[in-house]
Image (cartoon, rainbow, N blue to C red):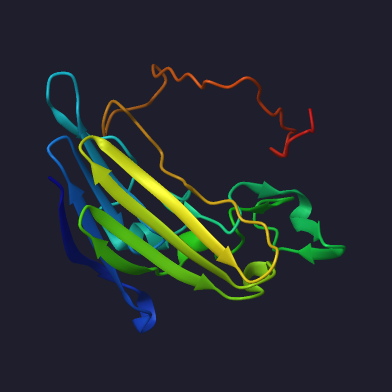
Length: 213
């Protein structure tokens, strides 16, 4: 059984809209998501002893998300990660993007999907956010309709991304949560171990662009 509750999280400056918070809760897990950037603000799970802790980094108030911060919990796009020197060629045409992380374009540009208000729709076991990215937004070609759906099933949180473009365009969406499995307020993650089941990986250069190897 999953409960979904809805509340006001805060108001954007200059009357730009109201940001809402959606709380999805099961017996095993609770997640808070706001409509600003489809951002996960809290993810509370139980440890071996049954003690609940928030295992993602975030802010308690909207103001924190409106200031310069490292994409805490947000959906990033149109293209997550870096585009080398902010340029790409598509169907013989070169496109130039804003350089927001020298010397590259990062996470969709100056005003990526993390810095916009999305339209929410409550589901029986989650919430779906949608928006239309107009043709030319942040330098990308084509109109892009995007849906991001968070659903909860027991102890499993699923994030589903869907995009529909009016013409060929690069799209690479992801969630940018920072995790501390020891719980919110623990000093660091230096004793955490992670395993990635991959056959290969992409080496990167000093600006974090893949070398091609």
